[in-house]
Image (cartoon, rainbow, N blue to C red):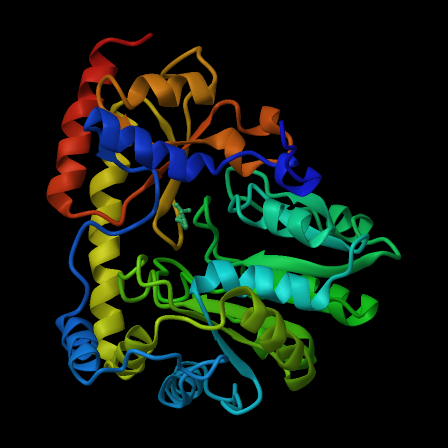
Length: 388
Ligand code: GLN
């Protein structure tokens, strides 16, 4: 029997994607994997169709079509005055933020290097580190406000530490890191010459507080790799168009790893992405208003069903505690919930290096039409009526 690599053997299949498959198989309302069930802006569709009709069928420049890189630089400067990015030397367009993060890890980290990750964490970062040969060190965010202990963070730094992953607004908790927390992280990066890998994909989905890109803090431009994507901001998770903003020497390395991993993201969709990035401010205001409405629809439904809810300040997930609803562990409960009453959610343990920390937790995603959330609420009511 041919064997598989120790790298591939070192991690399991994505639990998030598995829950989506189960939801499809059982006909459950899918609040597991975070993807919208509503249309993307019409401007994007029109631009993608136009690109196909114009026969934009061949490879774009490997690090991204120029109009898209120009649009990324312009939007970054417009959204965060003072953050100037050179589209010629500081941007790499990738196949989603997913490829952006692993291309950056592979470009910057060596086997044996250590990278700090706050947990709970979006499950990709663990395999990203393993595939790179880097060792992940976890620092726990603790409910109810998902704060971290600065001493614990400092203690996680060793002579081998090369980087830290910061995802704000945060998946799965909805935490929005505040200015003080970001400064604590930034000073650690400056003192220990660390690279910050920031996952900024929920930058426009903030209900309380505001998103401060780590790259905009003093001394951080030259040591931040900012990963972003079309997926969440423009409701096109399947397009797989993302980008990485990093200082020139890091970008030069990221462009090479990206090139040999994927060559490039879909050319016609890069054309459409450039159009999206030019949407007016009103688009982003409507986006967050829509998410606020969805959040405000789902949270009471979960509370009524008996879950303890940790209200998110940003992103489109809500972490819950299931201890009042069931004595089962998170995975057993999630597998039951997807069948009866038929709602898919993601077991909390899949967001922790130490599964015990997530055993009473479950994540619900709410990038869904209000009607979908209402259907989920109806089903969850059955749970409250018949506790296990
Ligand atoms: N970010 C989304 C989630 O956490 C989906 C990511 C994915 O499955 N590629 O559910």
